[in-house]
Length: 408
Image (cartoon, rainbow, N blue to C red; front, side, top):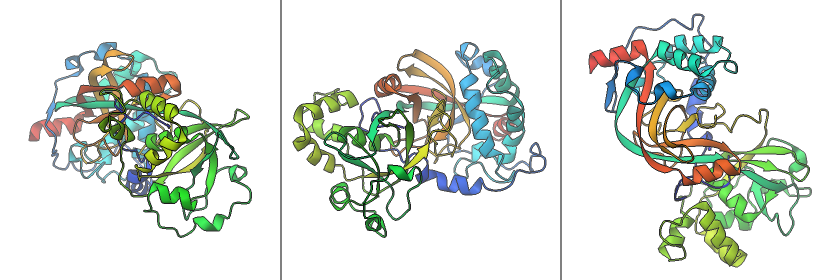
């Protein structure tokens, strides 16, 4: 799931497979045609949930709701709706999250959202939209809230002593994107039919996967942990290195290794502290350290069609800064709005609406979230410091919430 670096406040998380690991089922099911009447709702099924859910009487019970600017969340919701409306009305939004109902429960609010101009809507109108169509539902307990972002990574079309680590395409697949960014003279046949479960050291030693571009080793390693990144080339052009696959090996945190060995002091496992250690100790130290994390991430080179949107999340829609949330799909469905109350880096105590649109290897549990901060250095610094506890309220279409209240 943008990003060469920060995945959590302590930087001890596993790499996010961005959208391809968990999106396949969602994207396949998204291929059905839009029903003739998107407002038509199928017969109401039983509404159950493994979550501790309690519908509220109204938005007045959400602390900070009236002060929140929900425009970014509205734009993110519109993006999710474009995927939801492609689902047949009778299909579950997520079979593992039955409280989210069927796609038809969401077709009405989504059709209304798409009729509005998401770029022109003001804060009050955005709140009014959610108030008109949804009911807040408290999720019991608190959960950890971390942050991630899409870094800007300096890259080169050709290797040299500075840009010496390849950003590799998925083995066995013809890489997409600007073919001029492939290295001239590379024997491309070597990347076909390889065993993708080889560990990092063997992938590098055997040159498995066609290089799409080259970067500084520290930047490329951190981008693999982050899941994607915006590559900035010498001529100023940008391309997105989007997650394509990983090698199936377990993730090992180099931050945890440095802590355990006493190389970093407790509480200093942030991306910045790790990078400082790597710079001080040089390539002779970082190469074997990198290889202790056997997981390797392959990328796909993609154009950046809209510089104001982030990479694709697990739902298959672009992420929106401070409005997209990675959740555990064992408990939540893509496209569901979540009102979060907790401490947020750079914001202090924060109450805001976000949309469940992504997943992550370390994002497990019913109230575990990862907030997308955007791209660039400022977003990276904020995401790297984000590590707090938060409370959740999900927003469900009001008829669905009423069924939940009746059956609870």
